[in-house]
Length: 590
Ligand SMILES: Nc1ncnc2c1ncn2[C@@H]1O[C@H](COP(=O)(O)OP(=O)(O)OP(=O)(O)O)[C@@H](O)[C@H]1O
Ligand SMILES: [Mg+2]
Image 1 (cartoon, rainbow, N blue to C red):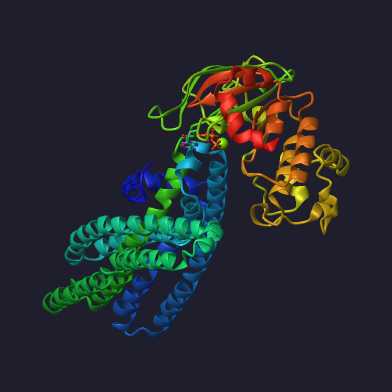
Image 2 (image 1 turned 180 degrees about the vertical axis):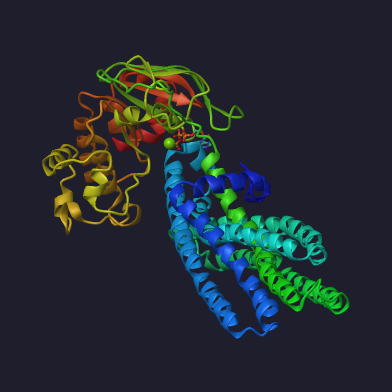
């Protein structure tokens, strides 16, 4: 797995990010067109104002014609007032464009997160995905709702301003243009600097959130181990580094601003000197009106130029977050459906694992090696084996949470890689080793795979002997707390049995919880199991003697290989691995 630091080093070129940005912004084509139209109108008004002042100065004040002066002055007033109308609408439209874009980005990232395969979730800390979905998206909000488009608008103004300057006086325009090389050089230099700092900062943000998320979800363990002192020290270190990274990131983006300010204002000083001298020497070529006009323009278009350089840095800060989102969106899924995938037709529930080879880390450590298992319709297979021998892995592979590297897995003769994921997973009921319930009501959890009527729920709950639900304070609508923590482990298990059964799957895969529960609950679960498994094909990873006994066939696996196989009595008679296991683990249960 790559570390956060490595991740933050991976850089998508600005060009590609801008392309992504435009693609996202132009989802709302009409609004964008309105915004651009408003920008152009604004630029025209922007250029018109100073020009009117020049006419007032040179033509009317100089020639003392009062009536025309008033006329033009009135026109100027109108221009100044009208300028704010496109400005207002531009902002308004951009705000909507920005928010809509964020909305669709959130939707896309959420959907991508849902579609991501288990490989992604194994490798990515919870906090990393959380950071991308929340603070990263939040921090590109200003980029989308204003900054980027403001930059556009400033660019229009700078170009518009330059054209007018050019028309008025070539020499003065050339002096003005001398600002650009220096400003651009600095902006490019600053870009690299800013981007690096902000990438580090955003990467660290994800690490920070991951750490917090882990503290919260591990609170029970950490309190039991009296780790709070230790955790505090760890957190202090983390916080200190966060502070340093934040300081250096924000410094990098605001450090240059005073320099830009001063530098651009110096240009005005220079133009005033040269233009003033020209006015004094060559009467008539550069009039007072032209000089004033020029300085007004300069002042006006240096402002967007300043905004532009400032924004350039600011955009870089958002790009670091945007990049993290694009990486999430663009990383290909490792489990995909074929283009012409058909729904699985699962009538008999025959499962075939043929010469399956699988490793979690693409070949380094084999978990299953040339593993074959043929399961007949309605057969109940119990898998036993030491911890880490690959039992849970087999179940994950049949639900296609991971793809195998070699061999094939077929259900009723259809390779699971050729059918739709939805149909595959709907045909299989899975009970996980650690029952995970969502922090909603019992009903919500039961109906997780399929909406069911009260009657259906009642039948399923009776089938798995989970009638206790009706004795809870709010019956089916009782909240179960975070991860189902308000229910006991045994109760959680029964609810997760019922959840797996509610879709009436032909195949049941059950990873028995290792922790032991009280004999009464044990008996209940046992009864539930036998009813649950009737008329279905099932694989049970067994940790209880009663389950092992009830199975049609038992397979013993060790390091991803089947070492013994047979009925309970056959295996005991064999006096091999199973017999030893029986002596150690199961016998005391009798
Ligand atoms: N998500 C994962 N990523 C990488 N390696 C894994 C992952 N899950 C399991 N493994 C490795 O694969 C091997 C088999 O794990 P598996 O969970 O299948 O064991 P198990 O037989 O179910 O054990 P237990 O009885 O303790 O539940 C182990 O060596 C484990 O370290
Ligand atoms: Mg397991």
